[in-house]
Image 1 (tube, rainbow, N blue to C red):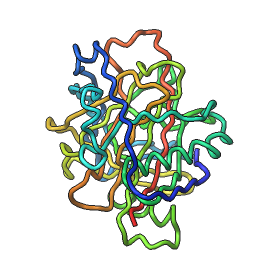
Image 2: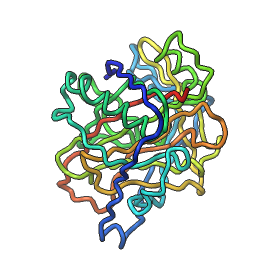
Image 3: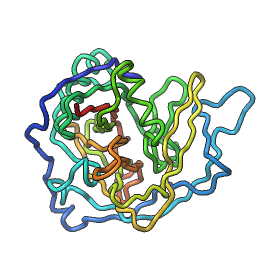
Image 4: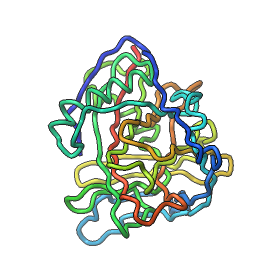
Length: 301
């Protein structure tokens, strides 16, 4: 879904309340081993038709590379994280929204809350929520995809390791969100991710990769073809240096803020690779993960 745009102008970085409540179980088991779906072989630039076109064209030209990686429970280090260093932060950010499937509540309340949070996390001056998406896990649906909507239903978890924007598509986004405004100053795009289910997230939580451990050579531009437009994201090739994290049992009052693009080319995190994954040992009857993610453009001048 595409959100009605909410714009908030701030006065710089405010007080931070970090969700830093480690549980005894997390202390005992700070790391887990789980599978992530990286980019494998691809003939040329990977291309995907988000909706299968007439004639049955191949919807995806990139193969998967399934890897077992170590994923750290970042609750133990939450107070030391930064969107400009590692590329992500966990916030205690309760929402006044009661029904996250109610477009009226999202437009009236959630967009403004999210823009405010993006300003606090980044220290920006202006924030615009330009897109959001609700996801729900479907039983039996393969996790090795980007979770595109099926028919008129909700999107599923995105299990392929990816970044929402590439160098090119991130740079273009300023003009699409703020047409006619000068893009000369620094801007960034952050994703604000929150569980909207009734229970803590045990089914397909979200993993994020420390941006300092990802090199440009790991990022491969992938063309996404929609019926009315073409976009571009990054898929990611595996490297043993990648440092993965997740936040155990996320609840509705918590929000994960992570960087998707930054026009500043040095000194800050620019791209955070991320993916949903199957949590080892999760109860078989764990409620299917439900989440909402919002994309926010933040300017600094």
